[in-house]
Length: 328
Image (tube, helix red, strand yellow):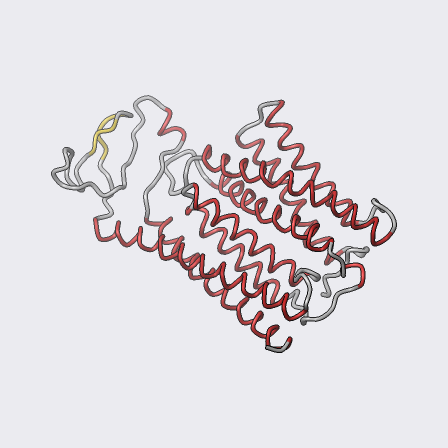
């Protein structure tokens, strides 16, 4: 295939990835909206608190039939709101179909990146369009790999809509035709520095989504898991991503020395990369030394996530500097 055909194929697979992510989002949303509920802190931790059970209950299973009161250790019997067996199966099926669609979208996203790279004969993240496409892929990858070890399908609707919006933004705002890059970016360092930054950004996006859900979740019964579970997902993602981001910053300094003859030049991108590093370091330090947990720690990590987003997009779009290659 010619370079033009490969570039066109890449564009088609980006559109396909958007559609698949949107369909997966719908499936995950159905599962979240009609699936099982989780007790809040008050319901789970207070003696005598009432817990509403919304799981289907089989008749003759040693408890009341579907629609009859169910007694729990937390308090007196409370009537459930039965889903019914058909709806329960349908909800579970919607979640599994959504997961399959997410994997298909991931494959389409990957194919778009690979075909773009073959078309331009370089690592395919030399401009803002390619960078955002790669970050969307990294965020979905982080979600799917986490799902292989832990049940985090509750994050599905929010990760899918984030990835779909990211790809839509790339196509509508940041799109750049396939072609060569500026000389400073034509280096093997792009495969080292930018790949590390993309990997860390995908994991930190997963943590950011978990943090937002933490603040949205109330103390009562909710479709979302407990705040403790949401905080745990965010913390684990940051613990893994922070050393990768640290490596990306160091690799960027080494690349700057090779390209411009200095490790640090107070370029806006360098400044905000370091600010982002400091913000996430403050979050981890506060958890380890001061024992910060809960809302305070979540707010700190979301402030750090805001720094990350501004560093990835705002600096390239709104601030002029040596890293201004957004082409928008």
